[in-house]
Amino acid sequence: MQGVQNTQGELMELRSKRLMYPENVGFRYETGGMMEQLRVLTADRIRKFHRDMYQPKNLCLVIVGDVDHANLLQILEKFETTILDDIPRPDAPFQRPWVESDPAPPLTKSTREFVEFPEEDESSATALNILLVYLAGSSASVLENTLVEKEQVASAVYYSIEIRPTIVIQFALSSVATERLQDVEGRFFEVLKNTAANKLDMTYLKDCIARERRLIKDSAESSNTPFSEPIIYDFLFADRDGSTLKEDLENLNEFDELLTWPEEKWRQLIGLWMSDAHHVTILGRPSATLSRKLRLEEKQRIEDQKKRLGRTGLEALEKKLAQAKAENDKDIPKELLERFHVPSTKSIHFIGTTTARSGAAKKLGHLENNVQKLVDSDDNESPLFIHFEHVPSNFAHVNLVISTEAVPVELRPLLSVYLENMFTSPIERHGTRIEFDRVIMELEKDTVGYGIGLASALGNPEVLNMRISVEVEKYASAIQWLEEIIWSSVFDVEVGMSPT
Image (cartoon, rainbow, N blue to C red; front, side, top):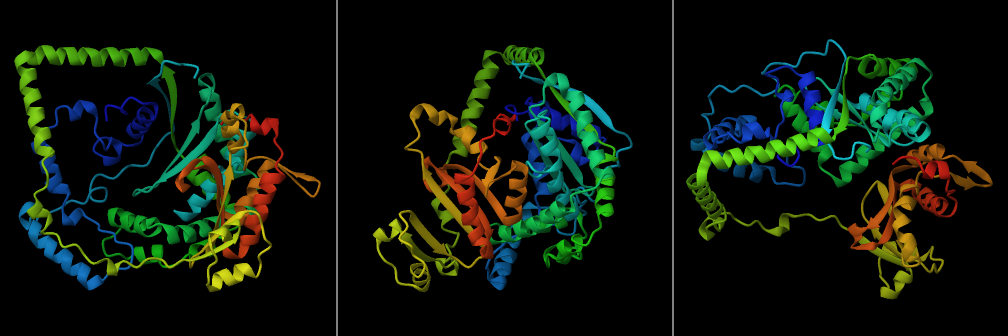
């Protein structure tokens, strides 16, 4: 914690918690602990906390995958019998955190505060989520397009939702000039209020709904998060009978309902949750004075500690620390490890894939399978090295690997600018210029993801990887987008020089 406690983000977040939540509400506090308390925290106090809180009554085990339920439950039941002596009695009273503790009261007023941070250089629920995507999900969204792209008063607008008994929405604007902090805060809420008061772009809003549905389906194929997160939130905040869990996981029908919402309902939601809601604003201001003050205080604290302990005390603590390190670094006894049975790998079910090759990739050898036959039927002897991996999926993921060898060495430092603007530039289409915000809206309508960067994940950081993910039936549009972005982009000085 010492390394982050006085950083800009930590100071601003902690102050916002202090303003939003009163004493004795858990959300008020820094979960990692403050250095002032950590320095006096005893091992016995930590052990007591672990004994009270790290027990089955406060444990939610989420397993996503193909498992033998009967065998799993048998293993868990056997494990539970081994820890009964180390946890509170199963029939002992237990107070659920967050739900049975003091509730967080609603905000009764809006608050704005400046928070200084040490810096030597001073110049320097589903509908709600859809709305946030509409407002700040990309360069085409309302807040990003207005405050970042057009007015250029910030480099980005970020948002997040914290799921609690009452939802918390957080917006963050980065790289705002210190002297304009208050003005930009006012402009931010002015844009929100104007959005709620005026006609919404319902076509774009419905595109956001459709894209969020695609993103969830895509995530469900590649991550356990769509399954584990609802279970965890249900465990933390909902009734333990699981009555609300089924509707959270059963289907995606809520997106169909959102498509029927009239414009007025969406505007009311913006007003209720954002533009007209009480809020806490934290304005972070760099302070060289605070930076020097913290350094001097830490230096003085160490000197005072040395004087209080003396040579004998320091040597005793050094010896105690060495003993603790030695104890912690001891090898785990072999006989203990051997008590754990290593299961057979036969229970692991891998996703089946089928490889096919085209173009220059065929030099690696010809393959005999149905997918290869399909590829061969459409082969046009492309000079490109084309590798196909066929998997059961609702989506197609296209990766184009581009060599940087031909880029002159003196120009390679500019690649970051090139990459930053690759998907945020206008394009020429049939003699007509399509502005960057329209390009982004069309991209989001067709895809579930896109981007470009170094191909480190593919094992070679000296080449670029341009990627587009689409629904299978839109595979042709992915190829078309690659062609347009590469060959028809227009480098616009105004767009290219926006603050990022």
